[in-house]
Structures are given as C-alpha cells and as structure tokens.
Length: 408
Picture 1: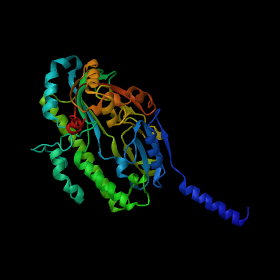
Picture 2: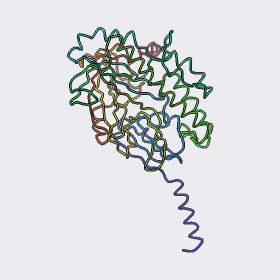
Picture 3: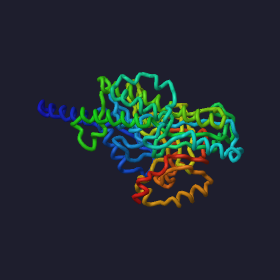
Picture 4: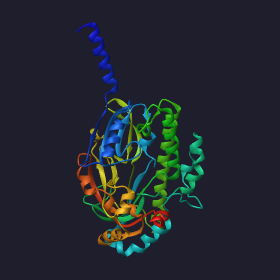
C-alpha cells in the first residue's frame, strides 16, 4: 500500500470509528416503530455506550418509554423523563384476602378521603416530611418550586398514576412473608409539578447547549457531568427521587392509618431515573425511562392496567438489558385514540366482568389501550423472575378531564 493510500485508509478508519454507533438489544415483539426509531437516534449520540429496549416500549420524548441508555460523563434530562423518579410502592396488609369483602367499605373510604389525584392537586395544610428540610437552595429553579412541592406532598398525578387495593398471591415463602393470598395496597406516582418543572428547565438548558443536534435529536440533548449544569441537574434529580419516595410514604401511612393497619412488608422502586453504574470497568450513567432496575436479586414491581395483574419480580441481572426490565404493560395506542375508539360503557363492562370497583379514572386509561401484561412478562423471562402476582380489586385514578368531556 502506498503512503498516500495508507493515509486515506487511516483517515477513513478514524472517521468510521468516530461515527460507529453503540449497540442496543430489543426485547418484545411488534414494538412501536416510532420507539425503535427513537432508540436508534439515542444510540447514535457520541456519548452513548450501550442501550436496551424493553417489551413495553412505546414512543416518548427523546428516549422512548421502555428505553434504557448508558452514556459516558453526561446525563440526558429527557432520558430520565418529565415525571422524574416516577415510582411504585406496595404494602402488604396483615389481612388474608378472604376478608376483602368484609373491609370493602373502609378501603373505599380510605381511598376517597386520604388520596388526591390530578394536575395541580395539593393540600391546604401541607403534609410534613424530612425531605422538605433538605437543601433546596442549591439551584434557584429548585428553590422556587419548594412551596409548590410542599403543597403537593402526598398527592398523585394524572395519566396512569393510581392507588389501588387488590389480591397479592405469593406462591411460596418470600419477601419476608409466608405463601398465601393477602390484601395489598399499591401506588404509582412521581415527583408531581416540581419534577415536571425541573425536567422542563434542564431539558431547555441542554438544548441551548447543544444547538448542533437539531430535530429530532434535540430532545436527547445532554448535560456534561464534569460541568456545573450536569452536576446541578443530577442533584435535583436525586432530590426529586427522595421527594417521590416521600410522596408514597405519606400516601401509604395515611391510607393504612385510616384503616388502622400496619404493613407486613413493603416493596418499592423508581422507573424514571438515572443511576451511576459500571459496564465492566467503565463508569457510566444508566438512564431507565419507563424501565425497572433488575440487577441480580433486586426486587421490583411491574404493574398491569386497572383490570389486569401486576407482578412483584426479582431481577436476574442480565447485562445485555443493562440489568433492567419493563415497567408495566406499555401502551398499544395513544390516549386520544383510546378515547375515540372506546366508551365508558366498554370500560364498565370489563370492570364488571372482573369484579373491580373503579372510584375514578379517565377513559384514556381503559385496559384495552394497553398491551397484554402476560405477554410482556413472557417476553422478559431472561430479565426477571416472578415472585408474586397482584390483581387489582379497587382502583382510584385521576378523574376524567372535564374540559375534554365537554368538547366531546
């Protein structure tokens, strides 16, 4: 090879190395093509190291819901998600399920009086928790949201957030409990309005810092973890994680206190968050947007819809999935499509068939808008093992959007 040809070869090799995409693995079948396209975009970023797409995946902002992405020395606000630290919590009550009907009315009163749902919902007398005594002043944006966060402490958002009583079936002794059928209380909520505002602020900042990305990559703009902006966002994200955990703690304490019971066992986990982890010897930031941590032995919760089961799972630590699993059934149609296709009569029919009491919810959360949770679980047998099954029996979600109903 001549010196000139060798120089050209080396230059092309250098360019190929620079533009070489990281790899990701897909779990599941017939996934939303838009979600796959978003994952293709995410893995093409120069900071991307490795990725994975879970079987509940569907389109989101920037990184798809169900997307897992490991990056080097950076954090992507929209790869964490708008609802920072959205999480699950389950409390097992010391009541066998055979006594459910006996307690039915007090369970309903507890949900109706001790929980609040929806955009802007809060308490006139804010609930107290140590998280409000932490440092919120490290960022002017975070500090400006402290009063709002305090008013909303102990409340839940709209969309797919819920609080529900149901039957937990534990087939063998585990999670500190004897096998059997228990009544359990399960919640899904996040960091409320404060988390959304923080996500919006730092996502806008990331886009301004990376004008070269353009559309559609600008929603994947990142903050450098070696600079102040990245460190500040990460600190805000971790605070929102503790705040979201406090939300669930307050809700569970209030509901269980109302029915005068204490939990025998609890399980909880985030599924919109970024963690400092390692791939081999390399330090990375792993974003799990709508994905459940599933390292070896780690316990988590994967819910279904309001009429379908959820599962307590134990992670198998699959490195190809970045030790992650699905965070739910995953939507198979948009909210608008669900409201056009189905009626409240359709919703009532399926709830009556399964003997589920619905206190409130929007039509966009109808079970038929979601994938089959049993299929999703079957498609990730190499990611988690099932520990217990939870079947909803009484559900409360944010009430229907009155403005949308009037328009219809």
